[in-house]
Length: 489
Image (cartoon, rainbow, N blue to C red):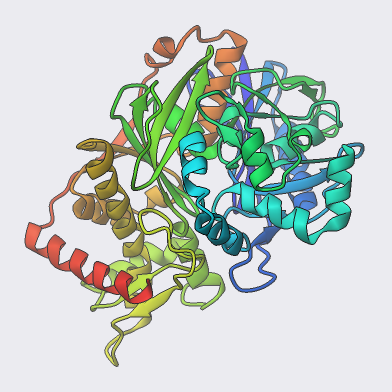
């Protein structure tokens, strides 16, 4: 049986996950990387560290497994994060600027004042916001003249993490991205499916410094992962992590909805093959297959599981993520405490880059369990806000939401989220949904599956959480949340 090795390069770390065509995880290896905070609101990663970790996790897995049947490598990645790198050697020229980073917010504000939002929205489907890549690229070009000169001379490349990894993996022979990642830059026309010169000019980004754009289920060269694999294999797929998870959940039908819980949360609802704007959120390019695009309404939450990481790393309220659920359940409720995780502003549906985080409602009665529980509950409240916007903007929404990601192992969070959003949450039994979605694209490319319909025949294993909280209690909690959000806006 053919196997695909998926590289899942996320905000917090890098995994290598080995799949067979049924979706079974045969083996995996993972390493975290550092989170760098040069100043308030700024977030960076060391792109060289990410490359070395990519080689390391593949090497670790290859040392344990017989990869004789390995047919290809697939890549899924944190979206919107920007890397400038040398085209000859692949070395990064600056730390990667992470999707959470708000250093481009002033530029976005200036462009909005100049009336540029309509151009950006109608061509990209996205909000003119620092969440996306365009302002990060513009910041690099304006503040790093050496990099700007190299980009204009054609000796440096600029792209998202997938572009950087593909270039390193192929020893500099391939400079390419896929359409799902390109569509997150604010530089890509999601109807024409190409880089847009007007948008590049708006952000002062040289269009020739951007990679070639291909469909996700396409071959992106060959690689031995820096010698970690016993022989070169083709890179058979590339897809942004949220779209890959959407694909893994097989949300191929109109109205199908998923939420991926990670450092942030991305909520996607299938709206079909015709592009239309979503007033409250973003219109995402979900995938392109055989030349035909599928679009989705998207809600974006910047801090979800990252809030738990903040409680651990910055405040020291928990030792590790495994104690979060038991600590939350050690108190009957949040004790009136709300944590609004606007560490990098608030995204959907508020789009307020200058909002800042706050813990509200504390008294002498408050203990650390209340604060930790409030942090967990904030994930569910933000999910409700996004879904309410979707329901009012593009339709009634689904009664069932397919969910995935590490935090779905927290049963308290899943039940609380089902109660708060008023929908059944179907948790995928495939924990590595983004990696599996990239591998599915790879199996399509390899011909193991002939169509999306063939992929639909795969078994779907889920654990379901049904809403059960009394409506009055839900209303009281939601009103408290909205009052807290108003305080930070």
